[in-house]
Image (tube, rainbow, N blue to C red):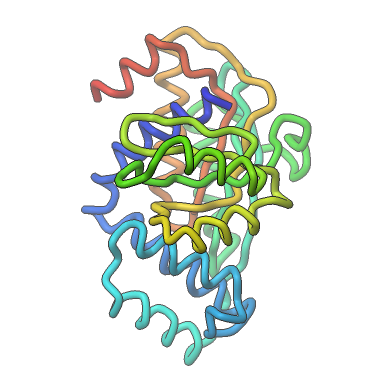
Length: 248
């Protein structure tokens, strides 16, 4: 799991740039809209919306922006759909893409174009089920937490793995324990920067640094598509590749 957490830590540092461009806010607004469409505008009775609002606060989205997104989704409805795409990058690296879109033809066209341009291929849904498993991932700032007490509470709530990376804890849980950990963090009044069900690679694929950098470029292009919410992969993070990512 630690390899995934290193990826997440590096992505988190780069995420500050995304926030400036509004990419993170845009993704969270879409998640809020989808949550309202699915379960209504009241976060007390809508766990998905409650989680989306929590993640919005975790990246310091202004309260008025959150309220505007909820109200707009409630008043206008919307035709967002959740869709996923699976395929392979060069070197046999598996790519799993989660989207929220109001036009699936546009979305699949944009995704297929990147696979084709970068020498990969778009596969059929379900073809990568054996490579990825779903886990709950929580990013919690270390500030003002007593490490021993905090870790014991998380283990008691069902955490499978707790890793301290720089100034944040990365907590991993089984899907069925996601809600229990979320509730425990809430009871402890602990600030959560991000909480998500993510797809974690069971097996990783190792490439040389130059080939890996080409795959990373491909992943970045997927992430730039407005309809894309998350991109998961099984590229192994070597020390050399990690150093290259941090330098960029």
